[in-house]
Amino acid sequence: MERVRFLARVCALLVGAALLLGAAACRNAEPAGATPTAVLPTPGLGTPPAAREADQAAALLPPFQGDLALLGQATQYAITATLLEDERLILGQASIRYTNTEAVPLDALVLRLYPNLMGPGAGLDLEAVWVDGRAVQPDLRQEASVARLPLAPPLSPGQGLTLTLAFRTQVSPEPSRGYGAFGVHEGTWTLAGFYPLVAVYDETGWNEEIPPEHGDMVYSDMAFYRVVWEAPEGYVLASTGSVVEEAEKDGHRVWTLVSGPAREFNLALSRDYQVATWDAPSGTRLRSFYFPAHAAVGQAVLDYARRAFRLYEDLFGPYPYRELDLAEAGVGAAGIEYPGLILVAEGLYARADPFTEFVVAHEMAHQWWYNLVGNDQVDEPWLDEALANYSTVLYFERIHGPEEAGAILATFRQRYENLVREGRDAAVAQPSGAFPRADYGVLVYQKGALFLDALRSAVGDEAFLAILRQYGAQYRYRIARGQDFLRVAEGVSGKDLGPLYHQWLYGVRKGP
Ligand SMILES: [Zn+2]
Image (cartoon, rainbow, N blue to C red; front, side, top):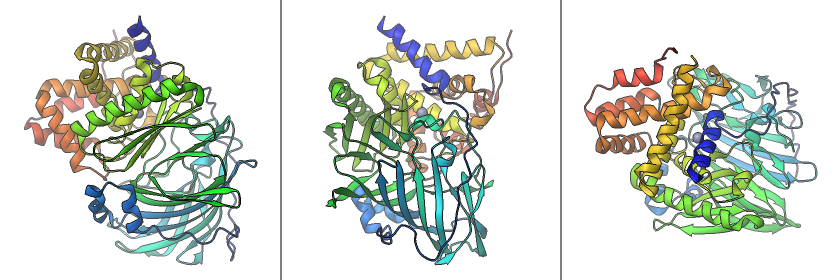
């Protein structure tokens, strides 16, 4: 009985990739205004200090602080932001140190303004932008979700610049996109993408596309964040990175946080959060934030996370950060991953059951497959989702036994075969926008995981686990492509895996 319900609910998660709460299409946000002025329009905040390397070490365990030297050219964000709760407004300033690590000169720098895609009542306005002290006029594109800053003369390879800007971010109580991960719901704030994020420049140029409504939105390089966050007294804060300083200021609380290497920075705040903690032997602290009525499940979420943490560290490589938070939130997906922060849907706290465990194990795996090893979540969503889902199969296999893991795989297989019978099979290795929303979960999460299971059968258990570990080590802090995963798999196993890879990821089976 339990399993039937569990598997049915796993399907609910995986078919839609998320348990959506009536997310309506809305791509008609008003363009944000941008009026450079000579004076910062948010007086009193002061200029954000630069994100210094010494600060960043505070987010990492001592054995990994040397990793900072590997990322000397990573973008550094220093953000100062104040939450005005009655106005649902964030007033912010940012100083962003960017170095051109590409082989070509850049004639523009591109920022992503994701709140402008979140529907009516949400938005991010750039109020003033300077490049190396010179005011520039951003060119807003893609429904104002992209700000292109012209660079004249172009920025040469290896050359750096400092971007200074002021921004106003409006938070909506009813975000209509992005799984509700940017919004305020009954006093709980989840603020994914509240600041301007530097886009990725890759072999396709600047990545400016508007992501579809299904799937994760963010594709980003490792960066360092130093965030000074001010909010009214009484809030409990869950976040990416670690708090290094906390102070009271005129009835407000001011937290200073550093991220270590992180692909984005997110935080969740509530006055109601209670916290359960577990300290790993390595020194990492896991924290589960939950609402008072949900103490038992809040503790269970911590237990699932603890088991996943130990297993994934053992299988995929060490987790280098001091902290990892899981926070209950009124989001529209069962779980959503961020660097050092996992949001878990409030609806999953009604009782501790295998579905909640599945979601926690899946999102925990994203700390390795998405944050530590990055990928283009918009153009190659299968790479982190198939790995996170198959990691969850490994979790159930190790924690609950092969029978449980086999039952999950059988469900994946059944859902996929149903799709084939209906003539709806499609290539897995496609951008998220290429999938019909209804088929995205089965094809990317389930068929993707079945590819990894077929790979495991082809190379054997030992080589399969060695592939995951090698991929995790070789692409740690970097961005990987599907082809990189294939190369690692072939290198470790000594086998030609091209045919298997192409069959599963590009093959389309015909219906009856
Ligand atoms: Zn996922």
